[in-house]
Length: 78
Image (tube, helix red, strand yellow):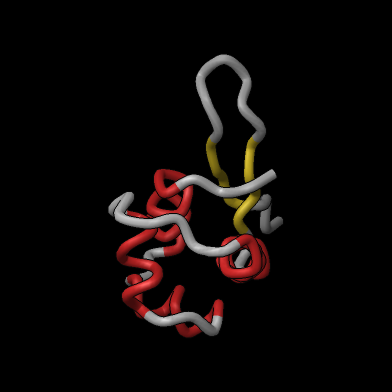
């Protein structure tokens, strides 16, 4: 599964991360994150995988589309 701009923004919101932190954690430029989340361009498959991996490493779970569209939530930390 890939990642949507909306999922990226929502995941950052759950983590309280600015775009610069996601860029750092995914080893990408802040402009790559900004342009992706604003729908200006679609990053390469490798860059999308890096964004997703950084968010998952921080505890984000990606939810498959279920009629309401894809989503995100945080792992249970208990």
